[in-house]
Length: 127
Length: 127
Length: 127
Length: 127
Image (cartoon, rainbow over all chains, first blue to last red; front, side, top):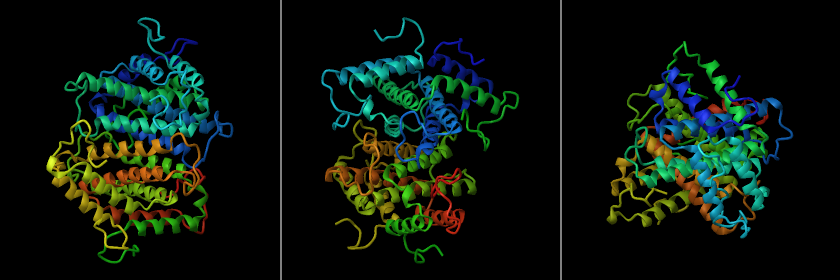
């Protein structure tokens, strides 16, 4: 039982609510200032990077990784996400809404018709 | 029109689908290897950090920030999220499922009854 | 015996030579590609951030920190430095020379007479 | 004129002195709290990562990079170093001394005779 209705997609709001409840139950809200959460997020990005650091180039789908490595990767990706959700919440930012808006801004910035290469100087993907 | 039904929460799957489509339309899939996306994510975390770098401690809700600063913050938070969603997808990780599982692991690791302080040596919040 | 002459300052070249020797002796050169070292550096920056993550604002000189915390901090700062030295070396960049040049570029960019505030929009310190 | 005697190696102390002077002249010391400098460092690591993000695996020595790309890389590596030097100084850590000590700790941790592989579970290079 994960709190997500069977077969439905996990929403950012669900994760936000879970993290608010999680912190409240443990009286951890006092530690959740924006810069504390930001540095915690940086710490998790570091742990995520450590998974990839000695591997050289890694093919899509991680065909040669052991199951336990993939599970570990999922945990580190999740840690980054959960701090990101908490940081957004503490800053009063609606992360889901902001993300949809950013996708549209990116679409306007990089129109399909131009077919610009991502290796061009001023093109850095979705940012 | 953002692609999310009116009043409903934004799901990780919706963002994943949008990013897959976005990359496909621009023929950018060729650039989306795991380590490329990871480094792009690190780049965005850097931009997020720059927003906070000279501010000293920042109170919850960012009461003194200008509206344009908050909009900028929402964009950088989104950039981190969108690369995180893409990195997870390219690695074959179901990010929403992994995040719910991680919340449960954290709950088991830090039981409510113990009321352990986050400042304890081995306690680092939700990670 | 640390390899640095008594009372003299530690140079970047000394650290570079030590790290080259260290990797060679252990046959680790094979792992030291630019992006491997970069991700290792990101991992260390994460560990550095973890030291500061739940502390709120920290005063200069770390007056309230235990000696063991300062020793740990010195180790993480060193890890970042040592990977930075190795990354520069593997990329063929003379880090000391580049750093002196960058100080001069910064001095030209932020002239003393103007006394611009670091909080201005386009001012980000020494970068 | 770079401030380093002709042909001599650049020391961490020289960089420290230059950065102290640089900040003092511009009245920027007020912004240089430990966590401000740490987040500035994270920001520069992000810029460093952006240089490598869409390149796939990069060979040692960067044989295919344009001269201007290498100059840019030297600048970003320097920015990381200069903030690292300032962060260490503001925390009261002697970075050079700490780095030499860390090299010795690493040498003790990974003895040459054992020839352990860096890909082993608990081996993460020089950290």
